[in-house]
Image (tube, one colour):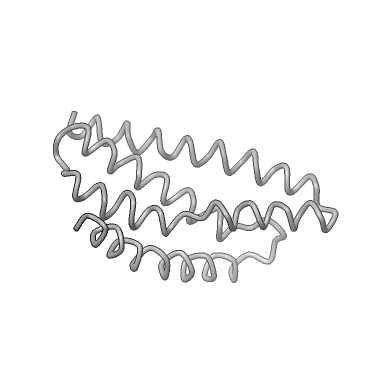
Length: 124
């Protein structure tokens, strides 16, 4: 029944992704896909926290399935990141596309590391 935990988390994560993406993008008229960037960073930070909590023994594998796999998996969106980067490059915004790749990869990795470090410091 683990799949139910994943499905429940995803049922929250997917609409949350859409709502956050639209709200953030509506506030920025820039070419840069700030909405997708925001959800990917938030999901990476949360996943780092969950992984750190599980490693420290203060969260269960069920929490990892519900929040980590389900919620964070549906909240983050690699496919939209890839599509938006491709569209930027195709429209002539190659520098913005390259910046999107570099900034997104470095920031999401940093967010995951930060989340795991915070969890380790709090519960480790």
